[in-house]
Length: 378
Image (cartoon, rainbow, N blue to C red; front, side, top):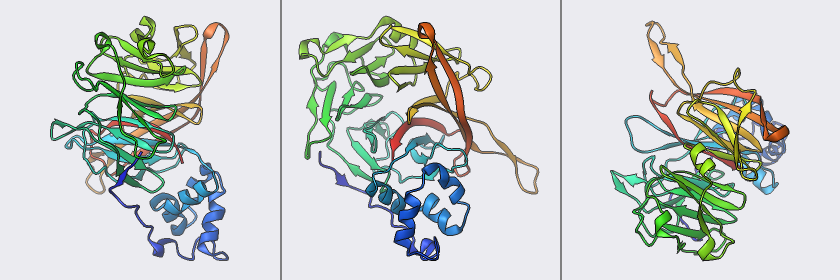
């Protein structure tokens, strides 16, 4: 798959970190030593000095490159937020450990709307379609968080909004977001092949829907759900048998954002309860033990698989008095909680909150909302 770079990596400011990380060591060796430490220790390290804060919180490119060379990785959360006065998205990187501030990422070269779809192959973000000034787009934009740079991938065969997208077994699948009669309703891109192009994936017309509101990879299949029914696509099956409707129970219980952790698909229902779907038993079960520790997620929450834990991310509330004026100033707040889920007898699910934190976004205007939440390994 070929890509066209559009935004070069942001070079770190040498004056911020030169010679002051570990005085007895050259900077390159000091970065190497810091890279060997677990990312969970970095929030505390960022408090040691301005140089450490600059390396860890402002210009982490050298550190992430060193960790990549050492074949070390930790789970991160990539969030996109939509300001109320803009149709474009702003992206941030979070380390899922308490006390870690958000790291702003560059904006995509094509300023698409929240109607874009997002997927990941583990270390890159794929932003698919969306609209620009109300016009549907056919762009594929690729973010490399390590280099903090975007590139443009092969254009889609059709413009798309509110499509389903997921990376599965090295292939990026996209379905919906265009008129159901389109010959390019579903297509796929081989992520491991240089100069790859989108290829049409044949699909039965009677199963197609235009707007998709959920997509996941579960039990070897690609699942996509719409307002009326959902589809399961099996890439390993013969073309005539690859598509089928999803289980009615799955369709009835999955009406919002979801995440797959340990072979279970998690979502939350209209009562705000977190529940999991087991494809082996075709059943939903409420995750017990969370009632007293978490709020009810009636809307605005999203889920992600972060290092084998179920992460819930939602829009919080924060009010702070202005200095000297007694005014109440609103601040955008994102709360998150990591949950360890265990299976009990008869398919029951038990959850335990492992950690929880509140992240402040002081430069984001009030009313900003979460649009995408993706877990990456960096």
